[in-house]
Image (cartoon, rainbow, N blue to C red):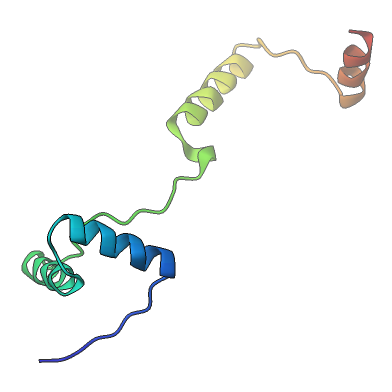
Length: 91
């Protein structure tokens, strides 16, 4: 039998203790269950994902496709920055 030691933020440690106590579990059973599940599944037993860059979100990609179609159909109005600033000041 081996012993492992981990560091947790004080707040996370307290919240983990509270959650496990409400389940009637200890940190020991929590980590043993996690380890046995990982070994049985041969993977981390939950999904770890990086947040999606908003540029690549489906809604933004659809907007870009829509804009590209408008450009292909000649439906865009081209203005310089000076023209846009003039329009903003006139309003």
